[in-house]
Image (tube, rainbow, N blue to C red; front, side, top):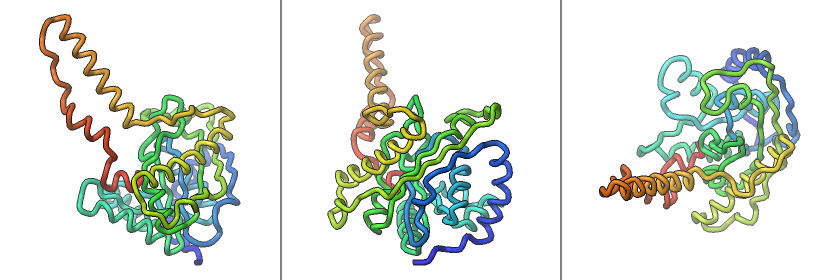
Amino acid sequence: MPRRRIGFWYRFAAVLCKPPLVVLIKRDWRGMEHIPAEGGFITAVNHNSHVDPFAYAHYQYNTGRVPRFLAKSGLFKKGFVGAAMRGTGQIPVYRESTDALSAFRAAIDAVERGECVAFYPEGTLTRDPDGWPMTGKTGAARVALQTKCPVIPVAQWGCNELLPPYAKKPHLLPRKTHRVLAGPPVDLSRFYDKEMTADLLKEATEVIMAAVTRLLEEIRGEKAPETPYDPRRERIEQRRRTRAQAERSASRTGEEPVPVAGEAAAQVAGELPRTGMEEESGT
């Protein structure tokens, strides 16, 4: 299937965004040969800075295959930003609504039209203390198994040095280098034509995230932790620590421990797989 033309809005966005990116960030970009020249595909990219969607879009724009990102629906509603999001073909994600699955369907439609859909499988900026990829959500795997399209793992590093996760002020000097490495397609063939159970999607997602992590190890020249950081498990552990601290405090004063707010519901939400478009989109 032929590739979709880049179009006016993407070119216009490139005119606006590329000059400041070129000024602020040096580039060490590798693996562009793995970006398919034709047909629909997915990229699975790690996320460690609010700047990296722009820098990664620059990387892939230069391959001639522009990415369609999944983004919060509120960005599409008003003004210039909304017009640009719609014009560049980004995919709105409606969380906690009856339209939540529309992003999943739109991602499949985009791939089947021969486009690229870029997923951040972690769903948010990494919370790993050392910036390694976290456990992933299942949206990318679900679209990949539904369409049997190539999944290109991509690792990036450097924007997090310009603007660390959750920081408000950039570190402009010395000038940082944005390093990107795309790898060959992830082999998911053993998952094809099987019932897409939660366990199967979880295993396929782990295969995708392992490929991304190996590429980041190559970029950083370091070994990632054996077990990826799991924010859901960390939330559960934090609640347990808070509960234990409350019980120790109560035992010293002879009072009944104060229940942790929403503890029972939070435990259920933390222990069980999440549902809805937030899980499916990987955003």
